[in-house]
Amino acid sequence: MAPLRIATDLRDEECGISAPEDSPTAKKPLRADSSRIPLTRWEAAAAATVFLIFSVGLFCIFLTMPEADYDKILRLPRNLSDLRILKDNLAVYARDYHAKFILGYCSIYIFMQTFMIPGTIFLSLLAGALFGVVKGVILVVVSATSGASSCYFLSKLIGRPLVSWMWPEKLRFFQAEIAKRKEKLLNYMLFLRITPSLPNTFINLASPIVDIPFRIFFLATLVGLIPASYITVRAGLALGDLKSVRDLYDMKTLVVLFLIGFISIFPTILKRKRTYE
Image (tube, rainbow, N blue to C red):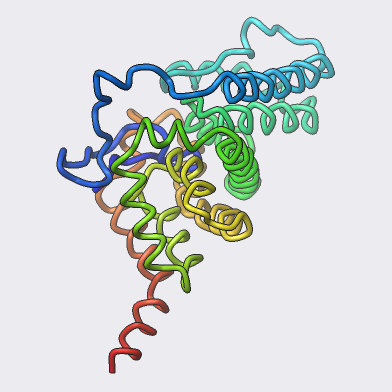
């Protein structure tokens, strides 16, 4: 099994079981002769330009936000203790400037998803703590899907050498699996999004490289992230009782996710069985 990544982010935080070293989905150590990032000057310039555009946009949104004690609220939490403090500091601000806070929250989430910055799991928990389950799930799923879509197009621009450099074995495995499931690709992508079979970061980057159409990528992401997002957002309601992020995905939760995932590919299995009969 591939390393567990907690969703929408969610599976992108490494806090689960690790894959066996000989597994095709396990991350292989980089070879000594491939320590240099394999980007041309044009690709590096394109990546820097995209990053600059997103950064300027995020800064412009920040300038429109109402005045506040930014030293307390402009903090990216790295553990649950930081998140509890941030939630307390943000509660009044989110209530008084609801619409602008949501704009800022979604912008930061999309920025982090686009550029694969760790920490979106804490933003998902924060959504539950501040907005409740329904609104929190909607915000997380929309933000995560938007960020994953941006990452998809960024990878389409410069991702091939990076993915081939970072995950050569995993990319070959993914490409072979996609080739075998061209007719029911949406079902397979739903399964990957719902279950922790492959990290979301890898799926975002590799999908355009293995020629997964964007409409399938988008729909599978939008629908497939809902179960894990619900689990994380709901946990945010009881943030004070949560001892570790690892507690979000115990064995019972993983079984439920895999059951939902198998339901998504059941039509494919049934059709294949009828074909053989």
